[in-house]
Image: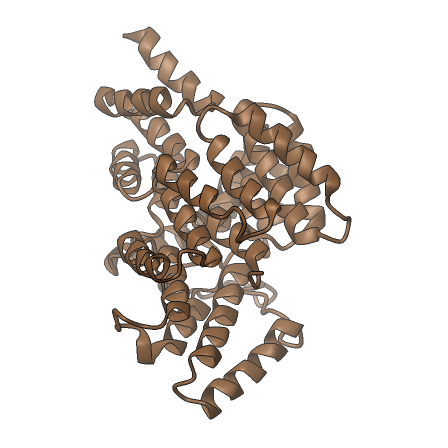
Length: 393
């Protein structure tokens, strides 16, 4: 019913945190054998299809369907490859309508998808509201709006959109929408049971949906401190070895378990993605590898460049960098607070409480405590830090 809706679930709902690299200072390798970047296989189907879509868009200027199909293809590559250039290409494909407040609905949905990738949530919601007012059964618009509202922590509104998917989207996608919210609002066990039940009913060939569900189950188990997280993350990567979000989430789990050596082979070929370069630096530091200094310097240059452009996409990752690699807890706290004002996923809460704990910021710790009480989020590592600070007062 909706083209690529399973991909949209995983890319929109799960990968907002994984940003591609900012433009950094030129990097000069010190060794001729050093791999700077591994280019994607341009013979793959998605690139061959892209050539066809580009040709159609060029030959049919003003054709909304052709432009939207091309923009969608660019967006998909941007998220799968972690390459921000393709996000820019997606926007360029919509140039005739990019600033048109009354653009066709198909354009508005893709425009909103691009905007939410850049954390421009108010603009994305404005476009989606307009589409849904025109077309109350537009499943993709409803799903993307639910995604944005979930990322903002507006769970009641997001859940209403999940309910509105009933009858216009497949049951699996409705479940995924609801389970993502349930897992963040005190119903993790119910969400886990429902997801496992659906997983058992999926055909083996449904790799994309299977990977998404296993990844979400891994996150639920990770927040609970359950070793089963390892099983789910491995299953997710078996279904989709190239999923950048799951690679990042599993790397975090491995770092928590003092298994930094297993992180490096997961991320070392994905250094173009800031979030994964961060995990590489954390693993190298944990292992006391000499190359950690170079990786940290590269990250610092990227964040400096991002900040100079006014980019807000990287704040969560930069907060972790400042706290864990740059020994600047106060800078980490400022970034984590700014990030929290934009998006409120469990990972955003974790860096917020870690930075607040490191700086003994009582007001911010109280903010975290109130969020846990209001949402009933079950996150053992966050609760431990809040309770530890409370016990010391």
